[in-house]
Image (cartoon, rainbow, N blue to C red; front, side):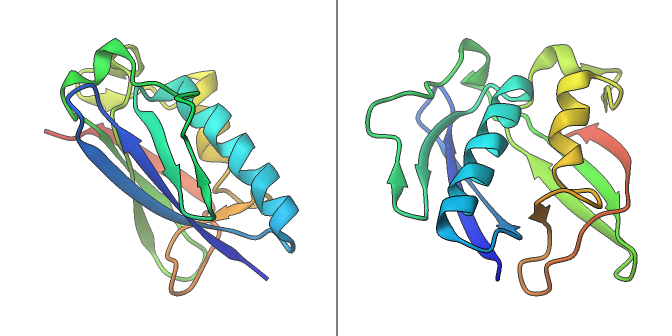
Length: 145
């Protein structure tokens, strides 16, 4: 069994970006563990503040507040390779400025590696919610303009 999880991320100007991805968890308890792990790794590489998770977990206590760098929604687009579906795109809202150089995401950064590993073979998250598939490689990451 797999669960689709919708996250709502907020920038400092009150704009929300939604992100829906799929976890391979077999139980809701395992899915919640996966969500907590994802959020911990996401917040290392993004300034976005978490406001809502669609599996009935809401950020009512402001545990994940928007950081000062979120005044502009500049995200990054990661191109990932799948074993059977070609290339897939994963967008990361509000990436931290320090993780981008010359318009390219620093793929060797430990925080970026930890986050992208969640989608690779052996990870618990899948792209393409209609046909959840693991990724075999992260090909590149570029700053959205």
